[in-house]
Amino acid sequence: MKIKLIILDVDGVLTDGKITIGSDGIEMKSFHVKDGMGISLAKYYGIKFAMITGRRSEAVLNRARELKIDYVYQGVSDKKAVFDKLLIDLNLDYCHVCTIGDDLNDLPVIQHSALSFAPHDAVEFVKKNVTYITNAKGGEGAVREMIDFILKSETDYDLLVKNYLDVKYELTQ
Image (cartoon, rainbow, N blue to C red; front, side):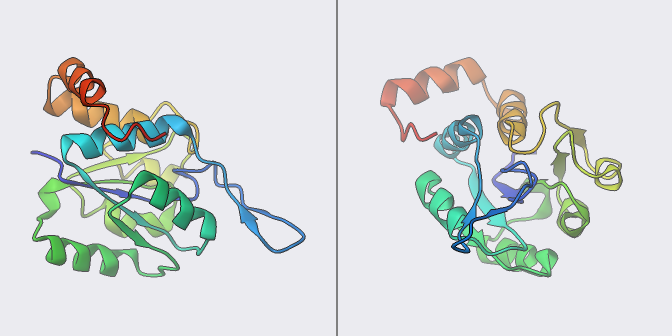
């Protein structure tokens, strides 16, 4: 099985799940640079990425632009419907998809992905329904841990990193 698409939840996966809203109403989120570098490496390898999140945030759009995330869906109440449409649009089967999520609203996508992960601090029910649980918590490198696992399973990781650095491909963190 070769992973061609990784579906990312945002809050609790790419972030620690905390939502900071300033007195001006602007929402702030913290993202981990190790996750960003992992996404950049996986994109170099040929994996596409989608963010599917229940909330709407300008911070998410900014981070997605920085990382050149292929598909971004915000304010989604039915993640499975978006997931199904994305697979049709990309002409992909479930067997080529990996998903990482941390809470109940991620389960419909997790349960229909060939490979699934949850951050170490995900809710217990989600952890019971995934293929792997990362050692890292959400927002603390869980996505990078997942990506490294996939890349090490599918290719010569050392050679991939060497080639990535040699061509100086989009070294985005």
